[in-house]
Length: 572
Image (cartoon, rainbow, N blue to C red; front, side):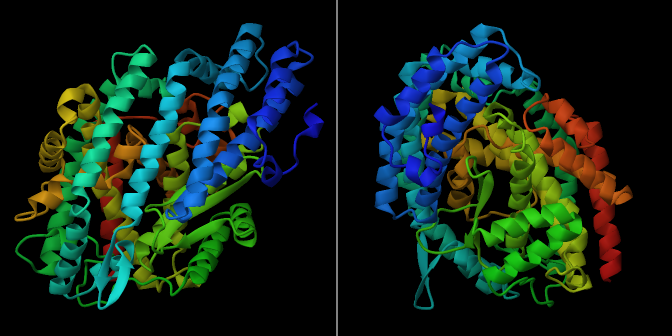
Protein backbone atom coordinates (compact mmCIF):
# COMPACT_ATOMS: atom_id res chain seq x y z
CA UNK A 1 0.00 0.00 0.00
CA UNK A 2 2.78 2.43 0.87
CA UNK A 3 3.95 2.34 -2.75
CA UNK A 4 0.97 4.58 -3.53
CA UNK A 5 2.12 7.42 -1.25
CA UNK A 6 3.01 10.59 -3.19
CA UNK A 7 6.71 10.76 -4.03
CA UNK A 8 6.95 14.47 -3.19
CA UNK A 9 5.81 16.73 -0.38
CA UNK A 10 4.34 19.09 -2.94
CA UNK A 11 1.86 16.40 -4.00
CA UNK A 12 1.26 15.18 -0.46
CA UNK A 13 0.48 18.69 0.82
CA UNK A 14 -2.74 18.66 -1.26
CA UNK A 15 -4.01 15.53 0.51
CA UNK A 16 -6.74 15.60 3.15
CA UNK A 17 -7.11 13.37 6.20
CA UNK A 18 -9.40 10.92 4.43
CA UNK A 19 -6.54 10.18 2.03
CA UNK A 20 -3.90 9.92 4.77
CA UNK A 21 -5.79 7.96 7.41
CA UNK A 22 -5.81 4.60 5.53
CA UNK A 23 -2.00 4.45 5.77
CA UNK A 24 -2.18 4.78 9.54
CA UNK A 25 -4.88 2.10 9.59
CA UNK A 26 -2.68 -0.19 7.50
CA UNK A 27 0.19 0.20 10.01
CA UNK A 28 -2.19 -0.33 12.89
CA UNK A 29 -3.61 -3.54 11.40
CA UNK A 30 -0.34 -5.05 10.22
CA UNK A 31 1.16 -7.76 12.50
CA UNK A 32 4.46 -6.86 14.16
CA UNK A 33 7.14 -9.57 14.31
CA UNK A 34 10.92 -9.80 14.29
CA UNK A 35 10.69 -10.38 10.53
CA UNK A 36 8.29 -7.53 9.75
CA UNK A 37 9.36 -4.73 12.09
CA UNK A 38 12.08 -3.25 9.89
CA UNK A 39 9.65 -2.67 7.01
CA UNK A 40 6.96 -1.49 9.42
CA UNK A 41 9.31 1.14 10.90
CA UNK A 42 10.46 2.17 7.43
CA UNK A 43 6.87 2.70 6.27
CA UNK A 44 5.97 4.64 9.41
CA UNK A 45 9.07 6.76 8.87
CA UNK A 46 8.06 7.58 5.31
CA UNK A 47 4.59 8.67 6.38
CA UNK A 48 6.05 10.79 9.18
CA UNK A 49 8.49 12.38 6.74
CA UNK A 50 5.73 13.54 4.43
CA UNK A 51 3.60 14.90 7.26
CA UNK A 52 6.48 16.54 9.11
CA UNK A 53 7.94 18.26 6.07
CA UNK A 54 4.54 19.52 4.94
CA UNK A 55 4.06 21.10 8.36
CA UNK A 56 7.63 22.45 8.44
CA UNK A 57 7.32 24.11 5.05
CA UNK A 58 4.12 25.83 6.17
CA UNK A 59 5.82 27.04 9.36
CA UNK A 60 8.71 28.36 7.29
CA UNK A 61 6.27 30.19 5.01
CA UNK A 62 4.73 31.99 7.99
CA UNK A 63 8.14 33.19 9.21
CA UNK A 64 9.67 34.29 5.91
CA UNK A 65 6.58 36.49 5.53
CA UNK A 66 4.51 37.07 8.66
CA UNK A 67 2.01 39.00 6.52
CA UNK A 68 1.26 35.97 4.31
CA UNK A 69 -2.31 35.36 5.42
CA UNK A 70 -2.79 32.49 2.99
CA UNK A 71 0.17 30.59 4.49
CA UNK A 72 -1.12 31.21 8.01
CA UNK A 73 -4.56 29.94 7.00
CA UNK A 74 -3.09 26.81 5.39
CA UNK A 75 -1.05 26.15 8.53
CA UNK A 76 -4.12 26.60 10.70
CA UNK A 77 -6.14 24.27 8.49
CA UNK A 78 -3.43 21.62 8.61
CA UNK A 79 -3.15 21.87 12.40
CA UNK A 80 -6.88 21.30 12.84
CA UNK A 81 -7.71 18.94 9.98
CA UNK A 82 -4.56 16.82 9.73
CA UNK A 83 -2.13 17.38 12.63
CA UNK A 84 -4.74 16.82 15.32
CA UNK A 85 -6.08 13.46 14.01
CA UNK A 86 -2.57 12.35 13.06
CA UNK A 87 -1.40 12.86 16.67
CA UNK A 88 -4.11 10.44 17.81
CA UNK A 89 -3.13 7.94 15.11
CA UNK A 90 0.56 8.30 16.02
CA UNK A 91 -0.29 7.55 19.63
CA UNK A 92 -1.91 4.26 18.65
CA UNK A 93 1.18 3.24 16.65
CA UNK A 94 3.46 4.07 19.58
CA UNK A 95 1.33 1.91 21.85
CA UNK A 96 1.38 -0.92 19.30
CA UNK A 97 5.17 -0.82 18.98
CA UNK A 98 5.73 -0.65 22.74
CA UNK A 99 3.29 -3.48 23.37
CA UNK A 100 5.14 -5.69 20.89
CA UNK A 101 8.21 -5.84 23.13
CA UNK A 102 10.41 -5.69 20.02
CA UNK A 103 13.61 -3.61 20.19
CA UNK A 104 15.59 -3.41 16.95
CA UNK A 105 19.26 -2.42 17.11
CA UNK A 106 19.76 1.31 17.56
CA UNK A 107 16.23 1.80 18.89
CA UNK A 108 16.85 1.50 22.64
CA UNK A 109 16.84 5.26 23.37
CA UNK A 110 14.20 6.05 20.71
CA UNK A 111 11.90 3.46 22.33
CA UNK A 112 12.45 5.13 25.70
CA UNK A 113 11.50 8.44 24.08
CA UNK A 114 8.42 6.91 22.47
CA UNK A 115 7.35 5.42 25.79
CA UNK A 116 7.55 8.86 27.38
CA UNK A 117 5.58 10.44 24.54
CA UNK A 118 2.93 7.73 24.80
CA UNK A 119 2.59 8.22 28.54
CA UNK A 120 2.25 11.99 28.11
CA UNK A 121 -0.36 11.84 25.39
CA UNK A 122 -3.90 12.93 26.11
CA UNK A 123 -6.49 13.75 23.47
CA UNK A 124 -7.66 16.74 25.50
CA UNK A 125 -4.33 18.46 24.79
CA UNK A 126 -4.40 18.02 21.02
CA UNK A 127 -6.50 21.15 20.32
CA UNK A 128 -4.57 23.04 23.01
CA UNK A 129 -1.32 22.46 21.13
CA UNK A 130 -3.00 24.00 18.09
CA UNK A 131 -4.00 27.02 20.16
CA UNK A 132 -0.42 27.34 21.41
CA UNK A 133 0.89 27.44 17.83
CA UNK A 134 -1.67 30.13 17.00
CA UNK A 135 -0.51 32.26 19.94
CA UNK A 136 3.09 31.83 18.76
CA UNK A 137 2.11 33.11 15.33
CA UNK A 138 0.59 36.18 16.98
CA UNK A 139 3.89 36.80 18.78
CA UNK A 140 5.70 36.61 15.43
CA UNK A 141 3.27 39.04 13.83
CA UNK A 142 3.69 41.57 16.62
CA UNK A 143 7.50 41.35 16.50
CA UNK A 144 7.70 41.19 12.71
CA UNK A 145 5.68 44.39 12.35
CA UNK A 146 8.00 46.48 14.53
CA UNK A 147 9.59 49.20 12.40
CA UNK A 148 10.81 52.78 12.83
CA UNK A 149 11.18 55.66 10.42
CA UNK A 150 14.80 56.72 10.14
CA UNK A 151 15.90 59.54 7.84
CA UNK A 152 12.56 59.31 6.03
CA UNK A 153 12.82 55.54 5.45
CA UNK A 154 10.87 52.79 7.20
CA UNK A 155 13.27 50.23 8.65
CA UNK A 156 12.92 47.06 10.68
CA UNK A 157 14.51 47.11 14.10
CA UNK A 158 17.11 44.64 12.88
CA UNK A 159 17.97 46.96 9.99
CA UNK A 160 18.74 49.62 12.59
CA UNK A 161 21.36 47.38 14.18
CA UNK A 162 24.32 48.51 12.02
CA UNK A 163 23.85 52.04 13.35
CA UNK A 164 24.62 50.71 16.82
CA UNK A 165 28.15 50.03 15.51
CA UNK A 166 28.82 53.75 15.09
CA UNK A 167 31.73 55.46 16.85
CA UNK A 168 29.33 58.31 17.61
CA UNK A 169 28.01 57.49 21.08
CA UNK A 170 25.27 60.09 20.85
CA UNK A 171 24.03 58.49 17.63
CA UNK A 172 24.10 55.04 19.23
CA UNK A 173 22.04 56.34 22.12
CA UNK A 174 19.49 57.94 19.79
CA UNK A 175 19.14 54.72 17.78
CA UNK A 176 18.93 52.54 20.87
CA UNK A 177 16.23 54.74 22.42
CA UNK A 178 14.24 54.79 19.19
CA UNK A 179 14.29 50.97 19.09
CA UNK A 180 13.38 50.71 22.78
CA UNK A 181 10.49 53.14 22.38
CA UNK A 182 9.09 51.16 19.46
CA UNK A 183 9.28 47.92 21.39
CA UNK A 184 7.54 49.45 24.38
CA UNK A 185 4.63 50.43 22.15
CA UNK A 186 3.78 46.70 22.04
CA UNK A 187 4.16 46.20 25.79
CA UNK A 188 0.41 45.97 26.40
CA UNK A 189 -0.18 43.68 23.43
CA UNK A 190 2.56 41.30 24.56
CA UNK A 191 1.26 41.39 28.13
CA UNK A 192 -2.18 40.41 26.85
CA UNK A 193 -0.68 37.58 24.82
CA UNK A 194 1.21 36.37 27.90
CA UNK A 195 -1.99 36.15 29.91
CA UNK A 196 -3.35 33.77 27.27
CA UNK A 197 -0.26 31.54 27.17
CA UNK A 198 -0.08 30.80 30.90
CA UNK A 199 -3.57 29.41 31.58
CA UNK A 200 -3.36 27.39 28.37
CA UNK A 201 -0.16 25.74 29.56
CA UNK A 202 -1.58 25.13 33.02
CA UNK A 203 -4.49 23.29 31.41
CA UNK A 204 -2.07 21.20 29.36
CA UNK A 205 -0.22 20.16 32.51
CA UNK A 206 -3.42 19.32 34.38
CA UNK A 207 -4.78 17.32 31.45
CA UNK A 208 -1.58 15.27 31.36
CA UNK A 209 -1.70 14.62 35.10
CA UNK A 210 1.15 16.90 36.24
CA UNK A 211 1.21 19.28 39.19
CA UNK A 212 2.64 22.04 37.03
CA UNK A 213 3.76 22.90 33.53
CA UNK A 214 7.47 22.61 34.33
CA UNK A 215 7.04 18.92 35.17
CA UNK A 216 5.19 18.36 31.90
CA UNK A 217 7.78 20.27 29.90
CA UNK A 218 10.65 18.31 31.43
CA UNK A 219 9.11 15.11 30.17
CA UNK A 220 8.25 16.60 26.78
CA UNK A 221 11.93 17.48 26.36
CA UNK A 222 12.84 13.93 27.52
CA UNK A 223 15.30 15.33 30.03
CA UNK A 224 16.24 12.04 31.62
CA UNK A 225 19.79 13.06 32.50
CA UNK A 226 19.30 16.21 34.58
CA UNK A 227 16.70 17.85 36.78
CA UNK A 228 15.41 21.35 37.60
CA UNK A 229 17.62 21.18 40.69
CA UNK A 230 20.64 20.68 38.40
CA UNK A 231 19.65 23.88 36.60
CA UNK A 232 19.71 25.72 39.92
CA UNK A 233 23.18 24.31 40.54
CA UNK A 234 24.19 25.61 37.10
CA UNK A 235 22.78 29.07 37.90
CA UNK A 236 24.81 29.15 41.12
CA UNK A 237 27.97 28.08 39.28
CA UNK A 238 27.45 30.84 36.74
CA UNK A 239 26.96 33.39 39.52
CA UNK A 240 30.14 32.20 41.23
CA UNK A 241 32.44 31.79 38.22
CA UNK A 242 31.09 33.62 35.19
CA UNK A 243 29.53 36.78 36.62
CA UNK A 244 32.94 38.02 37.86
CA UNK A 245 34.48 37.23 34.45
CA UNK A 246 31.61 38.99 32.68
CA UNK A 247 32.04 42.00 34.96
CA UNK A 248 35.72 42.11 33.95
CA UNK A 249 34.64 42.16 30.29
CA UNK A 250 32.25 45.03 30.95
CA UNK A 251 34.86 46.97 32.91
CA UNK A 252 37.42 46.49 30.14
CA UNK A 253 34.91 47.80 27.64
CA UNK A 254 34.06 50.78 29.83
CA UNK A 255 37.70 51.72 30.25
CA UNK A 256 38.53 51.37 26.57
CA UNK A 257 35.53 53.46 25.59
CA UNK A 258 36.63 56.05 28.12
CA UNK A 259 33.17 56.49 29.64
CA UNK A 260 32.04 56.88 33.23
CA UNK A 261 29.64 53.93 33.03
CA UNK A 262 28.71 51.36 30.42
CA UNK A 263 25.25 51.99 28.99
CA UNK A 264 23.03 49.63 26.91
CA UNK A 265 23.92 51.44 23.67
CA UNK A 266 27.58 50.60 24.30
CA UNK A 267 27.00 46.84 24.20
CA UNK A 268 26.18 46.07 20.57
CA UNK A 269 29.44 47.19 19.01
CA UNK A 270 31.34 44.32 17.45
CA UNK A 271 34.64 45.83 18.54
CA UNK A 272 35.01 47.90 21.69
CA UNK A 273 38.77 47.73 21.94
CA UNK A 274 39.56 50.72 19.78
CA UNK A 275 36.68 53.20 19.53
CA UNK A 276 38.40 55.04 16.67
CA UNK A 277 38.81 51.90 14.55
CA UNK A 278 36.01 51.27 12.01
CA UNK A 279 33.49 48.64 13.18
CA UNK A 280 33.43 45.19 11.63
CA UNK A 281 31.30 45.18 8.48
CA UNK A 282 32.10 41.70 7.12
CA UNK A 283 30.04 41.63 3.91
CA UNK A 284 28.17 43.85 1.48
CA UNK A 285 25.37 41.48 0.52
CA UNK A 286 23.94 38.06 1.27
CA UNK A 287 25.77 36.42 -1.64
CA UNK A 288 29.08 37.44 -0.10
CA UNK A 289 27.95 36.21 3.33
CA UNK A 290 27.11 32.81 1.86
CA UNK A 291 30.19 32.51 -0.35
CA UNK A 292 32.68 33.26 2.41
CA UNK A 293 30.89 31.01 4.90
CA UNK A 294 31.15 28.23 2.33
CA UNK A 295 34.91 28.75 2.12
CA UNK A 296 35.24 28.66 5.90
CA UNK A 297 33.22 25.46 6.22
CA UNK A 298 35.44 23.80 3.61
CA UNK A 299 38.45 24.74 5.74
CA UNK A 300 36.89 23.19 8.84
CA UNK A 301 36.11 19.98 6.95
CA UNK A 302 35.75 19.41 3.19
CA UNK A 303 32.63 17.27 3.49
CA UNK A 304 30.94 19.78 5.80
CA UNK A 305 31.79 22.42 3.20
CA UNK A 306 30.15 20.27 0.55
CA UNK A 307 27.00 20.09 2.68
CA UNK A 308 26.80 23.89 2.71
CA UNK A 309 27.44 23.99 -1.03
CA UNK A 310 24.38 21.78 -1.49
CA UNK A 311 22.33 24.23 0.56
CA UNK A 312 23.44 27.15 -1.57
CA UNK A 313 22.84 25.29 -4.80
CA UNK A 314 19.38 24.10 -3.75
CA UNK A 315 18.36 27.51 -2.33
CA UNK A 316 17.89 26.27 1.21
CA UNK A 317 18.95 29.61 2.72
CA UNK A 318 16.82 32.69 3.51
CA UNK A 319 19.30 35.03 5.14
CA UNK A 320 18.43 38.68 4.46
CA UNK A 321 16.32 40.87 6.72
CA UNK A 322 13.18 42.56 5.40
CA UNK A 323 9.92 44.00 6.63
CA UNK A 324 7.37 41.38 7.61
CA UNK A 325 9.94 38.68 8.25
CA UNK A 326 9.84 37.04 11.67
CA UNK A 327 12.74 37.89 14.00
CA UNK A 328 15.59 35.57 14.91
CA UNK A 329 17.27 32.70 13.16
CA UNK A 330 16.73 28.97 13.00
CA UNK A 331 17.47 25.77 11.14
CA UNK A 332 14.60 23.49 10.18
CA UNK A 333 14.91 19.92 8.97
CA UNK A 334 13.08 19.00 5.78
CA UNK A 335 12.90 15.36 6.73
CA UNK A 336 11.49 13.94 3.49
CA UNK A 337 14.02 15.74 1.29
CA UNK A 338 16.70 14.99 3.94
CA UNK A 339 17.83 18.58 3.69
CA UNK A 340 18.19 21.40 6.22
CA UNK A 341 16.86 24.94 5.78
CA UNK A 342 18.43 28.04 7.38
CA UNK A 343 16.48 31.20 8.22
CA UNK A 344 18.03 34.39 9.62
CA UNK A 345 17.98 38.18 9.42
CA UNK A 346 21.33 39.45 8.10
CA UNK A 347 22.04 43.19 8.01
CA UNK A 348 25.81 43.24 7.45
CA UNK A 349 27.28 42.97 10.96
CA UNK A 350 29.57 40.42 12.58
CA UNK A 351 26.75 38.81 14.54
CA UNK A 352 25.33 37.72 11.18
CA UNK A 353 28.49 35.74 10.52
CA UNK A 354 28.23 34.07 13.91
CA UNK A 355 24.56 33.28 13.34
CA UNK A 356 25.27 31.63 10.01
CA UNK A 357 28.13 29.57 11.45
CA UNK A 358 25.83 28.57 14.31
CA UNK A 359 22.91 27.54 12.12
CA UNK A 360 25.38 25.81 9.81
CA UNK A 361 26.31 23.55 12.72
CA UNK A 362 22.64 22.63 13.12
CA UNK A 363 22.41 21.92 9.41
CA UNK A 364 25.44 19.64 9.52
CA UNK A 365 23.89 17.78 12.44
CA UNK A 366 20.86 16.97 10.31
CA UNK A 367 22.98 15.93 7.32
CA UNK A 368 24.87 13.49 9.57
CA UNK A 369 21.95 12.14 11.63
CA UNK A 370 19.53 11.77 8.70
CA UNK A 371 21.56 8.77 7.51
CA UNK A 372 19.99 6.76 10.33
CA UNK A 373 17.12 4.66 8.95
CA UNK A 374 14.18 5.52 11.21
CA UNK A 375 12.53 8.85 12.07
CA UNK A 376 12.52 7.95 15.77
CA UNK A 377 16.35 7.94 15.72
CA UNK A 378 16.40 11.54 14.48
CA UNK A 379 14.90 12.79 17.73
CA UNK A 380 18.10 14.09 19.32
CA UNK A 381 17.85 16.40 22.30
CA UNK A 382 18.20 20.14 22.04
CA UNK A 383 21.30 20.09 24.27
CA UNK A 384 23.39 18.05 21.82
CA UNK A 385 21.81 19.97 18.93
CA UNK A 386 23.20 23.18 20.40
CA UNK A 387 26.60 21.54 20.92
CA UNK A 388 26.57 21.00 17.15
CA UNK A 389 25.89 24.67 16.46
CA UNK A 390 27.99 26.34 19.16
CA UNK A 391 30.97 24.07 18.47
CA UNK A 392 30.87 25.07 14.82
CA UNK A 393 31.18 28.74 15.75
CA UNK A 394 34.38 27.93 17.61
CA UNK A 395 35.76 25.37 15.14
CA UNK A 396 35.31 27.88 12.31
CA UNK A 397 36.91 30.78 14.20
CA UNK A 398 40.51 30.13 13.01
CA UNK A 399 39.39 30.58 9.39
CA UNK A 400 37.67 33.97 9.58
CA UNK A 401 40.52 35.77 7.85
CA UNK A 402 40.65 36.59 4.14
CA UNK A 403 43.68 34.34 3.80
CA UNK A 404 41.32 31.39 4.35
CA UNK A 405 38.54 32.82 2.19
CA UNK A 406 36.82 34.49 5.14
CA UNK A 407 35.67 37.99 5.93
CA UNK A 408 38.51 39.88 7.61
CA UNK A 409 42.10 40.96 7.63
CA UNK A 410 44.24 39.04 10.11
CA UNK A 411 43.88 41.82 12.66
CA UNK A 412 40.15 42.13 12.24
CA UNK A 413 39.78 38.35 12.44
CA UNK A 414 41.53 38.46 15.82
CA UNK A 415 39.15 41.22 16.92
CA UNK A 416 36.20 39.11 15.77
CA UNK A 417 37.44 36.14 17.78
CA UNK A 418 37.89 38.29 20.87
CA UNK A 419 34.37 39.61 20.40
CA UNK A 420 32.99 36.07 20.05
CA UNK A 421 34.71 34.75 23.17
CA UNK A 422 33.68 37.77 25.21
CA UNK A 423 30.08 37.41 24.07
CA UNK A 424 30.22 33.73 24.99
CA UNK A 425 31.24 34.68 28.52
CA UNK A 426 28.50 37.31 28.68
CA UNK A 427 25.96 34.81 27.39
CA UNK A 428 26.05 32.49 30.38
CA UNK A 429 24.75 35.12 32.85
CA UNK A 430 22.05 36.18 30.39
CA UNK A 431 21.08 32.54 29.90
CA UNK A 432 20.83 32.20 33.68
CA UNK A 433 18.44 35.17 33.79
CA UNK A 434 16.21 33.63 31.10
CA UNK A 435 16.25 30.14 32.59
CA UNK A 436 15.79 31.22 36.21
CA UNK A 437 12.93 33.47 35.09
CA UNK A 438 11.16 30.54 33.45
CA UNK A 439 11.61 28.34 36.52
CA UNK A 440 10.05 31.11 38.62
CA UNK A 441 7.16 31.60 36.18
CA UNK A 442 6.04 27.99 36.15
CA UNK A 443 6.52 27.40 39.88
CA UNK A 444 4.70 30.67 40.74
CA UNK A 445 2.06 30.56 38.05
CA UNK A 446 -0.48 32.74 39.85
CA UNK A 447 2.03 35.52 40.45
CA UNK A 448 3.42 35.25 36.92
CA UNK A 449 -0.06 35.71 35.47
CA UNK A 450 0.38 39.41 36.31
CA UNK A 451 2.95 40.87 33.86
CA UNK A 452 3.93 43.48 36.45
CA UNK A 453 5.27 40.67 38.65
CA UNK A 454 7.16 39.30 35.65
CA UNK A 455 8.75 42.71 35.15
CA UNK A 456 9.80 42.79 38.79
CA UNK A 457 11.27 39.27 38.71
CA UNK A 458 13.16 39.94 35.48
CA UNK A 459 14.63 43.11 37.03
CA UNK A 460 15.65 41.20 40.16
CA UNK A 461 17.40 38.47 38.17
CA UNK A 462 19.06 41.04 35.91
CA UNK A 463 20.58 42.75 38.93
CA UNK A 464 21.81 39.40 40.24
CA UNK A 465 23.49 38.16 37.08
CA UNK A 466 24.32 41.27 35.01
CA UNK A 467 25.60 43.96 37.37
CA UNK A 468 28.09 45.60 35.00
CA UNK A 469 25.76 47.80 32.91
CA UNK A 470 24.14 51.10 33.90
CA UNK A 471 20.39 51.16 33.10
CA UNK A 472 19.64 54.35 35.06
CA UNK A 473 16.54 56.05 33.64
CA UNK A 474 15.76 53.06 31.39
CA UNK A 475 13.83 50.92 33.83
CA UNK A 476 10.89 50.15 31.55
CA UNK A 477 13.20 48.86 28.83
CA UNK A 478 15.20 46.82 31.33
CA UNK A 479 12.34 45.06 33.11
CA UNK A 480 10.45 44.20 29.91
CA UNK A 481 13.44 42.32 28.50
CA UNK A 482 11.54 39.06 29.00
CA UNK A 483 9.08 40.14 26.29
CA UNK A 484 11.90 40.27 23.74
CA UNK A 485 13.07 36.71 24.35
CA UNK A 486 10.91 34.68 21.99
CA UNK A 487 11.81 31.42 23.75
CA UNK A 488 9.91 32.59 26.84
CA UNK A 489 6.75 32.95 24.80
CA UNK A 490 7.09 30.25 22.16
CA UNK A 491 9.54 27.62 23.46
CA UNK A 492 9.40 27.57 27.28
CA UNK A 493 12.37 26.00 29.04
CA UNK A 494 14.29 25.81 25.76
CA UNK A 495 17.16 28.06 26.80
CA UNK A 496 19.23 26.28 29.42
CA UNK A 497 20.08 23.99 26.49
CA UNK A 498 22.28 26.76 25.08
CA UNK A 499 24.12 27.20 28.35
CA UNK A 500 24.79 23.49 28.77
CA UNK A 501 25.70 23.17 25.10
CA UNK A 502 28.22 26.00 25.39
CA UNK A 503 29.88 23.97 28.14
CA UNK A 504 30.21 21.13 25.63
CA UNK A 505 31.22 23.36 22.75
CA UNK A 506 34.06 25.03 24.63
CA UNK A 507 35.38 21.57 25.48
CA UNK A 508 35.23 20.57 21.79
CA UNK A 509 37.13 23.77 20.98
CA UNK A 510 39.66 23.04 23.74
CA UNK A 511 40.30 19.69 22.05
CA UNK A 512 40.66 21.45 18.69
CA UNK A 513 43.39 23.72 20.05
CA UNK A 514 45.48 20.58 20.39
CA UNK A 515 44.19 18.60 17.39
CA UNK A 516 41.75 20.38 15.08
CA UNK A 517 41.24 17.43 12.73
CA UNK A 518 40.74 14.98 15.57
CA UNK A 519 38.26 17.28 17.32
CA UNK A 520 36.25 17.71 14.12
CA UNK A 521 36.23 13.95 13.55
CA UNK A 522 34.85 13.27 17.04
CA UNK A 523 32.34 16.10 16.60
CA UNK A 524 31.00 14.53 13.41
CA UNK A 525 30.91 11.07 14.97
CA UNK A 526 28.73 12.44 17.78
CA UNK A 527 26.35 14.14 15.35
CA UNK A 528 25.98 10.94 13.32
CA UNK A 529 24.64 9.15 16.41
CA UNK A 530 21.46 11.21 16.23
CA UNK A 531 19.30 10.33 19.22
CA UNK A 532 20.53 6.76 19.68
CA UNK A 533 22.58 7.39 22.87
CA UNK A 534 21.89 9.05 26.24
CA UNK A 535 22.89 12.70 26.47
CA UNK A 536 26.08 12.19 28.56
CA UNK A 537 27.25 9.59 26.02
CA UNK A 538 26.61 11.98 23.12
CA UNK A 539 28.69 14.64 24.88
CA UNK A 540 31.42 12.08 25.53
CA UNK A 541 31.40 11.01 21.88
CA UNK A 542 32.09 14.63 20.96
CA UNK A 543 34.97 14.73 23.46
CA UNK A 544 33.17 16.63 26.24
CA UNK A 545 31.88 16.03 29.76
CA UNK A 546 28.22 16.75 30.51
CA UNK A 547 28.52 18.95 33.58
CA UNK A 548 26.96 21.77 35.63
CA UNK A 549 29.59 22.36 38.29
CA UNK A 550 31.64 25.45 39.08
CA UNK A 551 34.97 23.62 38.79
CA UNK A 552 34.44 22.54 35.17
CA UNK A 553 32.95 25.91 34.28
CA UNK A 554 35.90 27.67 35.90
CA UNK A 555 38.40 25.74 33.76
CA UNK A 556 36.57 26.74 30.58
CA UNK A 557 36.21 30.40 31.52
CA UNK A 558 39.92 30.56 32.40
CA UNK A 559 40.81 29.19 28.95
CA UNK A 560 38.52 31.69 27.27
CA UNK A 561 39.95 34.64 29.20
CA UNK A 562 43.52 33.52 28.49
CA UNK A 563 42.75 33.20 24.77
CA UNK A 564 41.20 36.67 24.77
CA UNK A 565 44.40 38.02 26.35
CA UNK A 566 46.59 36.18 23.83
CA UNK A 567 44.57 37.45 20.86
CA UNK A 568 44.64 40.95 22.30
CA UNK A 569 48.44 40.79 22.47
CA UNK A 570 48.57 39.68 18.81
CA UNK A 571 46.37 42.59 17.77
CA UNK A 572 48.43 45.16 19.58
